[in-house]
Each structure stands twice: as structure tokens, then as C-alpha cells.
Amino acid sequence: MTLDPDRPTRVLLTGATGYVGGRLAPALLERGATVRVLARTPAKLANAPWAERVEVTPGSLDGDLGPALADVDVAVYLVHSIGEGPQWAATERRHAERFARAARDAGVARVVYLGGLGRDGDRLSTHLASRHAVGRALAASGVATVELRAGVVIGSGSASFEMLRYLVDVLPVMVTPRWVTTRCQPIAVSDVRDLLVRAVLDPTLVPGVYEVGGPDVLTYAEMMRRYARVAGLPERRLIRVPLLSPRLSSHWVGLVTPVPVPLAAELVESLINEVVVSPSAVATEALLGRPPLGFDESVGRALRVTREGAAPTTFADADYAVFSAQSTDPAWAGGTVLRDVRTTTVAASPERVFAAVAALGGATGWHAGDALWRLRGVLDALVGGPGMRRGRPARLEVGAPLDFWRVEALEAPRRLSLRAEMRLPGVAHLTFEVAPAEGGGSTLTQSATFHPRGLLGRLYWYAVAPFHRFVFPGLLAGIARDAVTGT
Image (cartoon, rainbow, N blue to C red):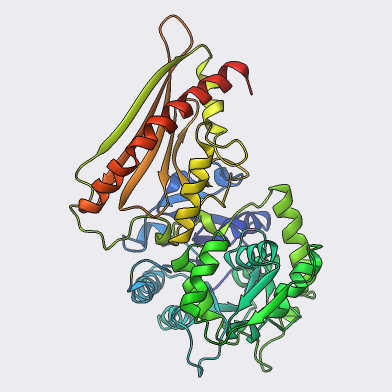
């Protein structure tokens, strides 16, 4: 099967709820492609501005891929299993092999994949070695495969950019390990998106591996200094400590930035490897048809979008296992459910009550005991959780991060359910349900539930229960007050 330039290209996009996939989908639609997305959680796409223009097929890489790949010209593979248990790299290879076989059996003309830079002859980090292994597995099926290999992606909301941004913004003096002297070749996320568009839609592009990067080759230390200059910050002082290992580095990265420790560990480990486009590679400018953005311009654009709160996607949108209970938890975990349920009647319509609920978090805070919420966030960050640094998303929707919660269900004006992503010996939810009350007004029910894991989980719940008696009534009262006053 070959691509037909005389009709719209039919595309299957995996990873559409992720950072790059969420930006690629509208770009493909703008170019006239017909797009189908494979989504493990279709509800996460409900509020995407392009959702009604794509066909959504529920499913996962472990399931039947036949319906998703049927009548598809190009399959785009943007799935990453990073952090999903100790064997996540093996999971990635298995998923890639299954996907490649299914694409071959469905008669797909081309597979497009976004991997990572790094020389195959080097001792690559687990992250980069897995990226290369996935590319080989996809190409081994016999389906024509275009693999783009990129390094550090600079864009509002990317894990690499957020790690860089928080480190430089927060720390005027940084104790840095040896990996800050490793060279890399950052590339703007808009250039990555446009390169993927060409890889999908250009029938003349020869299958193979393409290394891509921006025009600047920089060490991480140079990236930090140049970021500070673009951001208008005083010059940052870097003090190198040769004994600071990647594993130790990941803990202070997890403390200072929104990137959780398990994900930071994989990213930091990869910074040991030089990720620079090889001299023999096809020039990125030739692939793009224009010069790629430089580092300073990429950072400037990312900062403008970040300050406007207009990032269309962020790395936290993805279903990273590092944000949730581990898959290695035993099947019996959470059989017990511990609850704190409170109900009040509010002299306001359900719409106004729900608006007050939906305004929680970020600058609004959590009404009662804000100091306790912040303390809990600091303690969470110290043990590798996201803490409270993520704040409110630009748009509240299923799958969006909210402080150290994630939106699990959103049914305006009736129900909002949040799942805790802080480090816990169990699984916690905070749910708000709004219903019309007899005689007018609304009934607001607030439920905090906890599925403990083992004895430690139960001890944790009873240790924090005294604080619940102060925090949760005040939270309920604050919502009711805001609903009535309209603030």
C-alpha cells in the first residue's frame, strides 16, 4: 500500500491526549487529513477544541488494534510507557511489536514515530535505549517507517522545558552535577510538530531515521544561563559537584520542579548522553523547508504562552504511572474504603454552586487551612510527589492536573471528582456532587474517600483524620459562601 496524494490521508494517531499528540492532531486536521485517535480514556478528549473533528476509537495497545487501524494510510506512534513499573522498557518494546504487526496486517502504508537522539554505539540511558528499541521494533515489521529522533523539546508545558524553567526561576545559585556539561541540541515543539506533519503527509519522504534539532548546540549549563537571560533574570551561578549522581539529582529536581522524581530520574539519566544531530544527518532545515527556531526564540515563545496560561497541552496531561498508584500493587489493595462525607444546603443555584467548586485550587486555594494544604504539598514534593506546584490548568477538564490532584470526572453542573496524585499509601479521591434542593437552592455533598494499602495506609488515614475535622468543614463552607456571594 502506498500513499495517494490525490485524496485526504487517513491517519491513526496514538498518544493524542499527550503533550505532542495533542498539538499534532489539530495541525493534521488543518492540512486536510482525516484523523482517528486511539484513546485509553476518551473522556480526556471531550474538551479538546478539535475533538468533534476526529473519530475516537476507545482502546489500548494491549487490546484489539484491528478496528483502530482499519482503512488507515498512516499510523502515528506517540506512546510512551516511561515509569510504568520497573519493566517499563520491556513494556514499550512489547507494545511497539504488537502495534507494528497490527499495522502490517491492516495494510498500513506508513508508520511515523517520534524517538530520541543519541548515538547507537554509546552506552545509552534506559530512556534513550528504549526509544531506539521502539523505533527498531516498528521498522522490523516491514511497514515503511519514518522515525524522527529529537533531543530536548522546548515548549510551554514540555517536561524538559518545565524542568529547566523551574530550576532557573527558583534557584539563583545551583549546585550542579557533571551532566550539566553534556552537549544537547534542543528543538522547538512547533518544529517537532511541523516535522511530524511532513512525515505523515508527504508521500515523497523516504522512510528511515531522521535526526532533528535546532540550530544551537548547547550544554545544559549554557541552556540554564541563556534561559535566565531570555526570562530577564539575574545571571545564575552554577557550582559543579562531581559526586552528585543522576539519582540524587533527580530528587532535588523533583523537589524544585513539577516533574515527579521517577520521571525526573529518567530524564536526568538521559542528560549524561550527548544528544546532538550527527554530521551525516539530513539537515533539519531541509526537512522543515525553513530554518528551525533557535533556542532563545523557542524559550521566548514558550514563556509568553506560559505567562498567558495558554499552553494547549502539557507533559502532565499524559497518563504517566508516576502520577498514580503503581501497577505492582497487589490485587487486594484498597478493599477497605475510608470516608469523610459532608453535606450542606446552599442558597444558590446548582450552576453557581458548581462554578464555586470548579474554581478551587491554584490562586483560589482550598478555603480552610491553606497553610496545611501548602505544608502537605511541600511534604509531598520532598518524597517525590508533584506537590502543589502545578496549580490550576488553563482549562478544567478530565485528565487535567489541579495542584496535587487530577480531574477524574467532570459533569457540569453536577459532579467533579479529583484523584490525588500525592505520594500516599493508598488511593484518595475528593468528590463534589451538586443537586437541586427541595424548596430551592442546592444540596452540596463533599466526599473524601481513601483506599488504603495495608497497615500503613490505615495508619496514615487515622493520623490525618484530626486535620480533616478542621479542613473539610471549612472547605465546604467556603464553597457555599463563594456560591452565594458570586466570588
